[in-house]
Every structure is written in C-alpha cells, then in structure tokens.
Image (cartoon, rainbow, N blue to C red; front, side, top):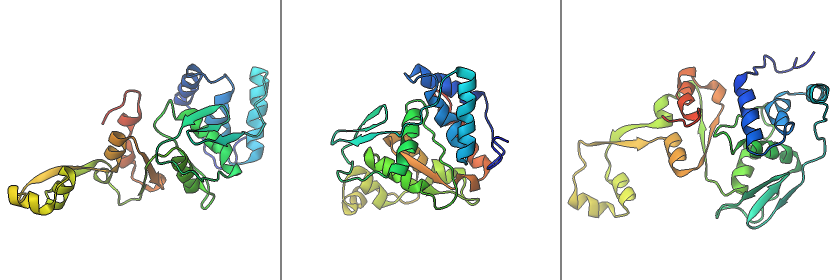
Length: 231
C-alpha cells in the first residue's frame, strides 16, 4: 500500500498548477515530480513506488543519479540550478551530501513560490538544512517559534507606544538629539512584525513548528501566498 507511513496525504489541484508553473519556468516534465510528490513520502519504498508510477504513465524513469554540486565565490551550482551568492555568503561553507538532494528540490520551487514546507521527524536536520541554504545564498534568516499562544499580531506587527530609542534608531541619530527636539509621550506608532519585515527586506522567515500554531493565524498567510498576493 502506497503512503501507509505518515498518512493522510493531500494532493490537490494546487500541486498540479505548481507542476505546470515549474514546467513553464524551464523544468522538464518529470523533474518536478520528485519535489511535488516523491519527497513528500517518508519511506524509500514509497518513493520507489512513485518512480514506478511515473515510468508506467509517462514511459520515462525518474533520475536516480546523485545530484552534483559546486560552490564558487560568486554562485552556487546544485544540479541544474545556478544561484548567485549574496554579499554575506560564507566563503568556507561545507555542504553535507545528505542535504544536496533536498537543496536541489528547494531550488526547483523558489522561483515560483514564496513558501516552502519542510517536514520530517524531530532532530533529523530540518533547521540545519534551512540555515545552510540561507548561509550559502547570503540571505538573512529569522526564526519565529510558533505555538498555540502565537497570534497574528506576532507575525504582522502592531501599534506600540513610541519610544525615543526606536525613533533614534530609525532616524540614525542619538536619543539625546531626538528627545531635545520631539516629544514622543502618549503617541503610538505601527511596528512591523517579522513577516512584514521579511517581505519588505527580502529576507527568509522560518515559522518553526508551524503545525502547533492556531489555524486562524496560519489563515492570515493565505492571501499573501496566492499569485500576486497581498496582506
């Protein structure tokens, strides 16, 4: 029986649209199957069964050749993906071989979606994989620990009472200079949350243990993650 470990599984039209989008971005017909379907299954046996189904339907075998990679000063090449490195990329990064296939799948979807779901058992290296990817590409990484007590304001931001320290930091001046020229008492200002800051600055945001968050909080992400999304 396919997918007996880790079920129930949900495959829907959104997966099919992602498949078509990835083909439109230059991927071949079979390439996205590994990321969209095969890697979701927990056992090697299930992934082999997916490969057999692909061969039966399309008459082509999924590639089983290990993904090759090279790290250059100006770019990272993993499989068929060449990604320019950011100015903050590490120069002495050592990439683990067990991360290469997953990074190849990650690079397959980043051009077409702002959301990547990384799942697996505890202590298998999910956080390390994300930190490695962020470090390779020089992208600032923010980790927000999710849980039942986290609400939408923790993600989006809220109005807070003005503080001289925050105003000084924003304007690039000293607290003494600001306090002499402006009174912030009794005033409130909007302070962006980690999600808004990540969107504005182009950083990576990790919602750790997102499965523990309230569904109403995760629902706030839906409008952002749709095509041409907004909050």
